[in-house]
Structures are given as structure tokens and as C-alpha cells.
Image 1 (tube, one colour):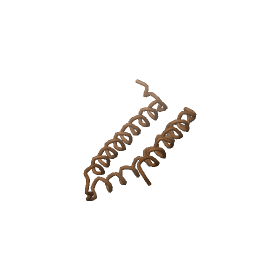
Image 2 (cartoon, rainbow, N blue to C red):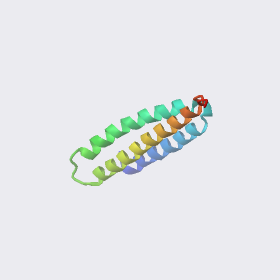
Image 3 (spheres, rainbow, N blue to C red):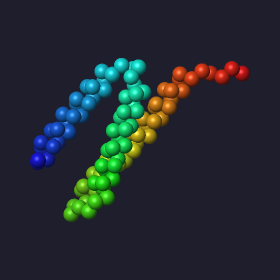
Length: 95
């Protein structure tokens, strides 16, 4: 595959993903965040494999490093948001 067709598939997946996520009910937000955290964990493993392997050009290593940083930030922020939403449903302690 050439770069143009790969870029086209990437952009198509981006727009389809945005449209799907935009239509999700607010009640399903926390389970959806858990699912995206799992998907990001798979992306981290793949990114580590790409960034850690030997390439003739450092472009793939740099792109792998960027993918690791993006996936890890997505995982951390997803857990923080999920934790904050779950705290909203806890009963407040009486004094």
C-alpha cells in the first residue's frame, strides 16, 4: 500500500470514529471510556513494538514514540474522567 491510500483509510476511520462517539448517550459514557482505555492499551503495545524495533530510518521510531505518548495520555485521562464520574454517584458522608 502506498502512503496516500493509508492516509485515506486513516482519515476515513477518524471521521467515522468521531461520528460514532458523538452519537453515544451520556449514560454510556463511562463504559465507553473503559472500552477506549482497553483499545489504547493495545495501541501502546503495538507502538512499543514499532518504536523499539530496528529500522533503516528513524521516522518509524519517532512516529512510534508519538503514538506511545498519545495512547498513554489517552489512557490516563480516560481513567481520571471515569474516576471523577464515578465519584459523582457516591453518597456523601454525613457529619
